[in-house]
Length: 217
Ligand code: DX5
Ligand code: ZN
Image (cartoon, helix red, strand yellow):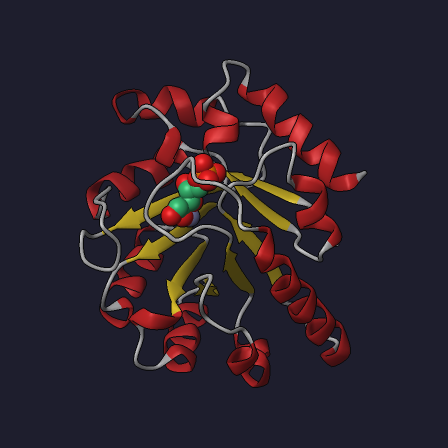
């Protein structure tokens, strides 16, 4: 499957968001982290800013909701123009119903799994989702160390997707850089989120190219 790079604007300059969005035109998606001070101990942005991001960028907007009450909020972001919305296993009462609602709105549905959560409960509902997001840090902050102990989970998921002939993508988020991209991709992920590895360098295009090259090697 083709490798996609999704820079996370969590590590961008929120006072220069338009500039920092234009700087990642070499990417495939822009990853937008929503945090609510409840589901995770950090707070980022909400509807008004996401609406402007969707208007300003040419990239598909991949919204990662680290919010309580996903059932209430995910459809709002689909309505604003997100191309995909990820919601967490621990934040929805009815993942299948929510995924179907998002898809009916023309938005891709993605289920997010934290490091201590198993992926096996999703196996029988895989075809309800366009993508499964495997967290390789505890959600909440950029710049954390990559948890390589999550790669076995990615491999089990990739094997199951292949076994079922499903089209579900696998996204990995947290600590992805040119140093970890190869193991992430060889474990079976096809969509790589990178925040500090892209925005922590001056040449964002080069950072995106480096991660893609390592992932495709
Ligand atoms: C963390 C967020 C990530 C974060 C990744 O909770 O979901 O998307 O921006 O940042 P890095 O790539 O720096 O680990
Ligand atoms: Zn994220």
